[in-house]
Image (cartoon, helix red, strand yellow):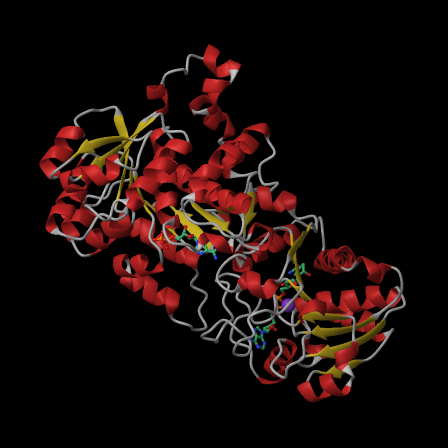
Length: 551
Ligand SMILES: NC(=O)C1=CN([C@@H]2O[C@H](COP(=O)(O)OP(=O)(O)OC[C@H]3O[C@@H](n4cnc5c(N)ncnc54)[C@H](O)[C@@H]3O)[C@@H](O)[C@H]2O)[C@@H](O)CC1
Ligand SMILES: Nc1ncnc2c1ncn2[C@@H]1O[C@H](COP(=O)(O)OP(=O)(O)O)[C@@H](O)[C@H]1O
Ligand SMILES: [K+]
């Protein structure tokens, strides 16, 4: 499991470590600087072979302190190093000042300005180290620092990005929200929303490196151990960090559930589980996917196929009579039941074996559809509410009051705004505050009283109790092809299929999000929604064999 930290959580761990007396801030800073140099040589192996030229930009805090360590270590390797400082280095905090002084024995420091930067022949360095601000950045960057950062980001047409390493964050990036503080469009200069080739962070990844604009600006992420594990995993530092946020990876949610996944679906084909007696389709649950009317059934059919492929034992489509012929002509494995109205839906759901429901994709927004949502919610069964079901809930307090802890809401940004307008307003207001998507989804789940999954490249999932996971299709897991019509319907079906197999709401949502992206990665460019469920056998095979994540 990978824990993701906020800036404050990282500070609390460092503080706990330093207060223990077992390690000093200076030692941590030295390890951080070494970690950066190590990561640089891993990223640019040829730089090991002969000394190069580096420009290091040092800020007024400990991030700057790391910069002075990097400058010294590169100088020790005979690099030509130019150092710029923001603010008066004599006012640096103690550990950073010590490293500034150590650097002074090797070279000088120039005050940072765009003019000085460009005059230094800055366009000819092999490496630019951004050590201006890290976890301590507290307000929008301005003045000379902003001029230099936007110049580096390409404001004047130069492309520095391939040579920039950022320490902890591209300076200005909020490590909680993933937004550049103070900019509306998340970029340093209009149209330039990339910055570093590599960002090196310490101990654990930070939220902002996965959310919003963070991944684009960070470029690539290297996490370096600086010996804080003991204080991260135990003690007061840990208590301060509850509830935790974790990153969904093949080594977190899915592998933890692999044992569960085995007894649930794959077991049918594995000896161990045949012996355990899991051999009947009803052992794997029976999902119900509620379809819209004629001409709108594609979404439910996609969801049904996904629920079956992910392992639900049976899947039934609940279909309005006018759409029955259309659906019947296009399905094979899922079953179909004509459901003319909410009464018929209630009747169908008297069968307790129907243990998970998906409602919303292609449903429609009429009063009859609201009645269907009401009927489904009143059963209290595990239910995915997506698309139109979310819009219906958003405008009807009675429906909203029926939401229960076995529900999973899967809004995209527009639906989230309809459901939680005040929370969304805080999230979308560009300001100096660090209100993040994690904060927003936690608040939404608490308000709704159920699991909420807010979709996007940076998908965030939270429970009313504050349990939270980020599933980011970024860095090596990027899957931009997933932004295709109908892919949300597949996600809803996947989650419903996992709920049918007994996954709890949060785990079904997190595992569904992971499988969804894994299917997209396996297929690659050219993907359309229909392709996604067909990738599941291959993806599941790799999950079960322990090779997941290696596409
Ligand atoms: N605390 C520790 O023990 C360790 C800290 N480390 C480094 O220290 C960093 C955190 O250090 P700090 O807490 O000193 O914070 P930073 O160095 O990130 O920034 C804080 C300083 O910048 C100023 N500042 C913040 N926003 C500004 C803005 N927009 N414009 C101008 N000035 C601004 C603050 O007033 C303060 O002087 C981490 O990112 C990491 O790089 C590492 O060395 C590991 C150990
Ligand atoms: N750039 C991206 N990278 C990875 N996943 C993405 C990206 N953009 C969108 N997605 C995912 O694609 C799906 C789109 O769902 P949705 O917005 O409901 O669309 P639709 O209604 O067309 O199915 C979501 O699961 C979302 O997380
Ligand atoms: K930085």
